[in-house]
Image (cartoon, rainbow, N blue to C red; front, side, top):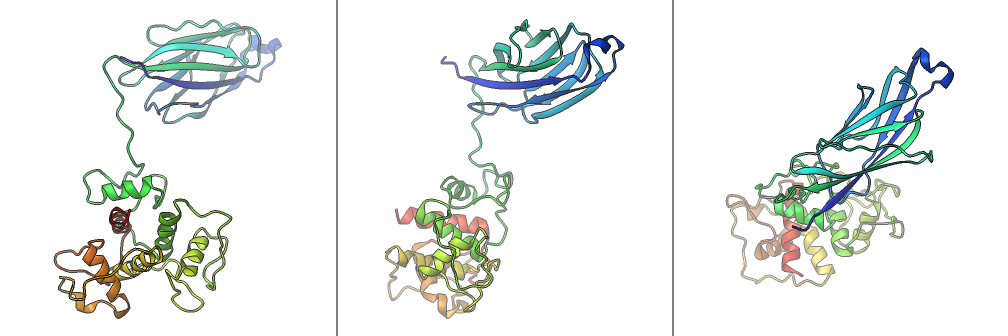
Length: 334
């Protein structure tokens, strides 16, 4: 089979603050190990890198928890060994190792064993050593595909999974944090205009976009300022008053429909609905008069759907619904 290789660069910096003249007294010293992952084609989870100085554990890190490890203990003898054990996870094996010194010309002896153990021998302990390890996939095995999204609260099988993946991959919606999407969180007015901006421009806002608005609650340095400025300038959104926008206010389902309707008209999408069309929902009579045309259009096209025979126009929209509505709109108009 065609092999797929993956490199892991471990930068190991050993700093021992002890003069050679007092080394025999074996005072306590501090060793600092900096271990980093570098230029990997994919992340290797759960690999373990363990270092020993003359049989004493110096550090223990995994590729899920790299960084700086500190060890304090007796100073090793001048001629000593440092064993670095690399344990490959699952279906991976260590197939190549190489070490070299950045700060010294003298080479180190490298002796990889069948278990992936390496021995580095140096004449002193002021070292800046690079260890290169090449992983290979065991014959006949393939690594699991990476998840399409990094969000732990959007599991496969949920009704909103596909739409959240679509919104994330197309840079239309982002996570609430690096690992959560918060699909059931309220969709706010500033989130709404930000998604429309990204959908229209194919990018996030930058310094070249205007941040000027008439709204006192929209500070120009806040992330949402260029999105609100753009949507207001295009007539897609209005303020709650002449001087307030209502940045963090939640968007109702009929509010969302209204902004989608205005956006569609702005880009030239046909929003006409047959004159005899009446949404087949039991609560259409409570739709706000300002949202009637918009709600007729989104229900006629199926961009917004009801729940158990109700349209729920006054219910607050949530982030999962927003992703689904935006995906349906794009699928119909591209």
